[in-house]
Image (cartoon, rainbow, N blue to C red; front, side, top):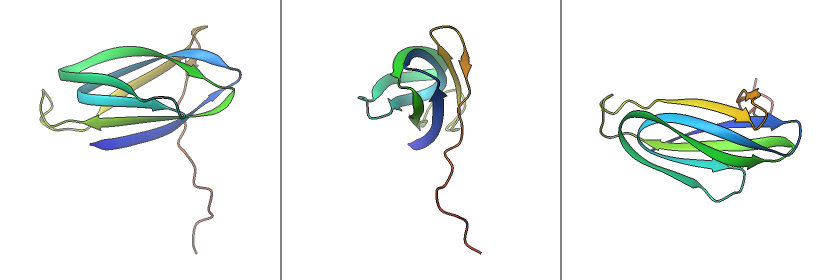
Length: 102
C-alpha cells in the first residue's frame, strides 16, 4: 500500500463531497476522524463520500493498494473535493517546516 497526503483549506466549517476514482483498495482519512474504508474494486471506478471539514487546514490522506485489476499494479487515483455549495477545493502539497540544508 502507498499513501498520498495533501491539505484542503476551508474558509469556514463545512461539509464536503470527496470523489475518488481508484483501482483495488482505498482508505480515506480526514484530520483525526475515523478512516473511511472505501472498499475494493477490480476496475478503475469512482466513489463519493461526504466529510466534515473544519475552518482552516484539513489533512487528507489516501491509502491505496493495487495488486490486481485493469492497470496491472499501477498506483494511481483521481481526486475531486467540493464544498456543499459546489465550490471546488484544490488540494495543496504539505510544505516542509524545516529550511532546506545547504
